[in-house]
Image 1 (cartoon, rainbow, N blue to C red):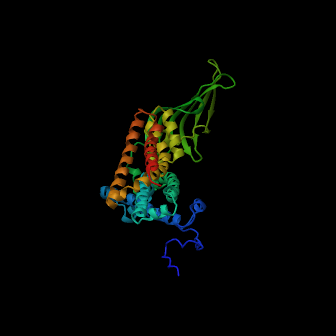
Image 2: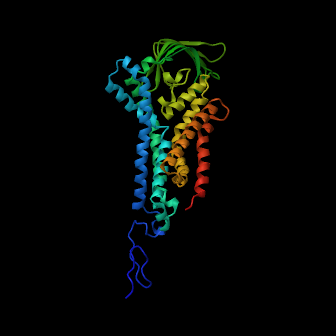
Image 3: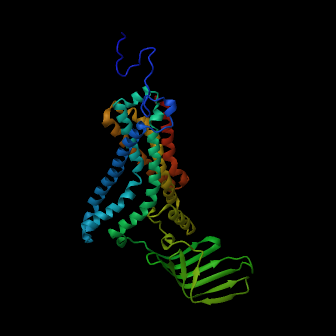
Amino acid sequence: MSPAVPPGRLAARGAPPRPRERGTLAEDPRASSFKIGPLDWYVFFEWIKIFVTTSLGFPVLVIVIDLTDHLQTYLQRNIPAPQIALGYIYWIPGSMFLVLPAAVLFATVFSIGALTRYSEITAAKASGISFYRLTAPIFFAACLSALLGLGIGELAPVTNAKHDAILEEQQFRGGNDRFNFAYAAEEGRVYKVGSLDAVHGVMNSVEIERRGVGFDYPTYILTTQNANWKSGRRWALGPGAIHILPDSVQDFVVSFDSARDNHLREAPGELMATPKNPEDMRFAELRRFVTALQRSGGNADELKVELAQKIAVPVTCIIIALFGAPLATSTQRGGAAYGIAISLATTVLFLMMIQLTKAVGAKGLIPPYLAAWIPNVIFSIAGVYLLARVRT
C-alpha cells in the first residue's frame, strides 16, 4: 500500500494530476496572464482601500490646519458654523489635486508591503506569477487615479468658487479694477481702455483700432463710451462712432447707438493685468488667460507652468506607481515605520521639486512647459531603474 500523499504536495508518480481551479495561484500562468482572477481583485481592492484613505486624509489634515488659522476671521464675518463646514467641503477637491500622487505612493508601498510581509508575493512567484503580473492591478488603479486627477483639476475651480462665495472671500479681495491699458487682440486689433471693472464686467472710454491694407480691408478706429460683458462671451458696445480709413486721406464716420463685438472673447477677468489664481480656472480658461496676459504685455511664464501641471500632476500618479512598486519590496526590512518614512520623504521631495521647477520656469531660466514635466522625468528614470532591478 502506497503511503498517503500529504496535502499540498505533488501526487505520486503515475497518479493523475488533480484538476486546477480557475483563478487560483496554481493556474497555468501562460493561460491566465491576460485574465482577471481573484488575485487581481484582491490586490486591486487592497490598493484602493489605502488610496481612498490617504487621498481623503491629507485634505482633511490641510483643512484642519487652515480652519485653525482662519476660524476667528470667519466668526468675525458672522458666518454660521454649518456654512463654514459646507465651505470646506467644497474645498476638498482643490486640496486633493496635489496630494493624489502622494496617495498613490502610499497605497502602492503599503499594499505591496503587506503582500511581502505575509509572503503572498513569494507564493505568487512560486506559482509562476511574476512581480510585474502581480502588480498589474496596481498600475491599472494608478491609471484610474490619473483620470481622477484630470477630473478633479476641472472640478476644483467650480468648487473653489463656491468655497469663496460661502466664506465671503471675494468681498475681501482687491485687484478687480484696471486703468489706462492697451490690449492686443486677434486679427491685428488693439483695444485702448480707460477703465475696467472686472466684477461688473464694464469697460469705459474704449477705443478699438484695426490696421487695414486698403479699400478691401480698410483701417478703422471705433470709439465708444462703454462696453458691457454679456452672456455668450460677447461684449456689447454703447453709443459711439466708427472711423473708416481706406487710405491716408479719406475718413468715413458712422455713428451708432449700440453694437456688438464678436471678436473680443476674453472675459473681464482675463483682461486684468495681474494673473488670477490658477486654481480658480479650468484648463481651457487658464489657457485663454495665458494668451490674454501675453497680449497685454504681462509675463505668463509662471501661469504656463501651472497650465502644464494641470496635466503633469495627474500623469505623475502613473509614474509614482512605477517608482513605488519596486521601492515597496525593500521597505519591509525596517517594518511599517520604514515604509512610512520612505513614503513621506518621497512625498516631500516630490512637492519640493514641483515648487522648485515652478520657480525656475517662472523666472524663464528653462522653458515653462518643460519645467512642469521635470519631476515626472526624474521619477520615471528612477522608477525604470528600480523596476529593472527587482526580482521577478
